[in-house]
Image (cartoon, rainbow, N blue to C red):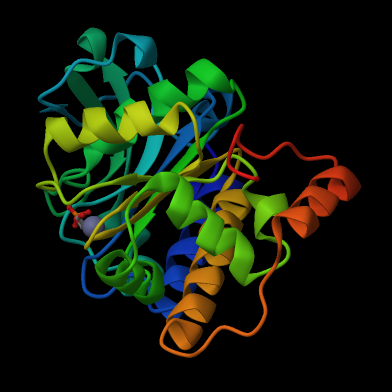
Amino acid sequence: MKNILEAPFLVEMVRTTTNMYAHGWDERNGGNISVLLDEGDVAEYVDVNAVIRDIPTGFEAPALEGKYFLVTGTGKYFKNVQYDPARNLGLVRLTNGGKTAQLLWGFTDGGRFTSEFPAHMMSHAARLSVNPDNRVVMHCHPANLLAMTYVHDLDERAFTRTLWQMCTECIVVFPEGVNVLPWMLCGTNEIGEATAEKMKTARLVVWAQHGIYGAGADLDETFGLIETAEKAAEIYMKIAHLPLKNTISDNQLRQLETHFGVKAREGWVD
Ligand code: 13P
Ligand code: ZN
């Protein structure tokens, strides 16, 4: 059996949590990540028949039966993952229709997966139904996106158009736009179901007055999505109180669509 601390999926997870903390997106235990893994990759590093313990999930996710996830622990600090991955992360396999998570590695202090596990797992199922390459769900609390939800209309089209207008490349990076949920109680199946529903039409879902969810094929892509949206929100928060002299017009958004071969969400560019 190879050393899991050297597994590419684990190394990448450690780097990403460290980087997200450095960006200020994950204060204290804020934020969580889950990564879908292939059984073949997992089996190189852990005995997939040696279940350490069963953890009830509190929800059903039949579409994820038998699937493996590397996931951050609840109450764990992103800044500490690099110093003790086995305590702060866990590797689980879903069974029993998604009602049970079998722990195969990690959570060494008796811990369990993030309290946002419902939103993560339901979002994985939703993203996989529209894109079988989706492997990552990431949640964090970037300050400018969060700030924007206090002062900007939460209408998804309006919110997205503002972000697209803040940086030229936004419409290229997330042409489908961002979806927005109003404030809801976090850590519940309800917010999980609502997030998953929004994930069917966009890889970014803003949680008003809380943070953002991103989904993508890998950690880099998902990080980059959130990074781009957060940069746009930062520009917005810098200029929102100033008289606007220039912007990116709808005609220019159309030029970007054509030049980069992307299709913006239907009806969101005039
Ligand atoms: P966890 O520590 O349970 O992952 O929760 C952090 C968080 O951001 C909740 O939304
Ligand atoms: Zn959160």
